[in-house]
Amino acid sequence: MAEKIIYQNGDVSISNSKAVFGGNSYFMKNIASIRVVGASSGLAWLLAIIGGIMGLAALNDLKHGGWLLGLIGAGLIYVAYKYVGFARWIVHFDTSSGSVTAYKSKNKQLIFEIKAKIEEAMTVTE
Image 1 (cartoon, rainbow, N blue to C red):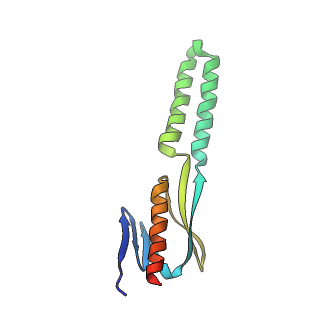
Image 2: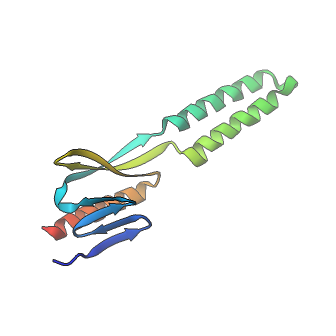
């Protein structure tokens, strides 16, 4: 059977015979199951907590430059939310060699789309 591309988006390519994520290739015949796992980013939570503490400390000392501390704290919270992100979504494969983390993204919709396309490709190979 000729290779048929089922999905392609950036560095992700899924065909009826393999899934390619960047430089890593996984053959469909070696994938026993696929699952999506959500994981929170510890760095984002740490930045948000430090920012919150700085904000509370700033409220206690507004007359003596506390506003600057509050501004920095708010900046840390913004960076945690906007750039680091609180949630990561991960595509895991179970293979005969064990569990493999195949792809990670902040985009939940993209991860579930990839999962659906891999499941579709697995049925095409059967």
